[in-house]
Image (cartoon, rainbow, N blue to C red; front, side, top):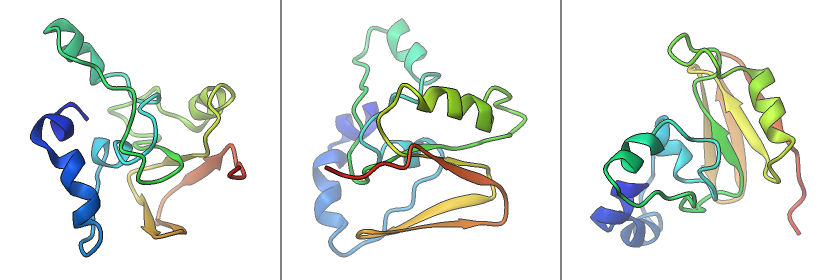
Amino acid sequence: MYWIIKSGLRNLLPKYLETEVYVGISAGTIVTTPSLILSSSEKQPLKEIGETIYDEGLGLVDFLVEPHINNSYFPELTFDYVEKKSRKIPHAIYALDDNSAIKVDRTDIQVVSEGKWKKFNTVTKK
């Protein structure tokens, strides 16, 4: 998010999305959500150099994403972990393994998967 803001992409992206497709992988997916509350590992290097830390995402979608579920590089990221975190978070959360993706076309949301995924906190918009 730091580089999206610093580069000016945050201001350009809404216009591009009128005619273009956005593809996000890992953090590139997380930044499209309303909150970066689930991401923490990227914040420590910014703290160390005294840079601004952003907790607000782009808000292009109204749910959160936790990628890399059951990935050996991120052993803490399990469905149980997300389920526990979801109790304190008022957003729907899609927990996806590395063989799963989310396709969003305006208001149509589809999970495309050859792996495992779960949705937590199924909420109704107010």
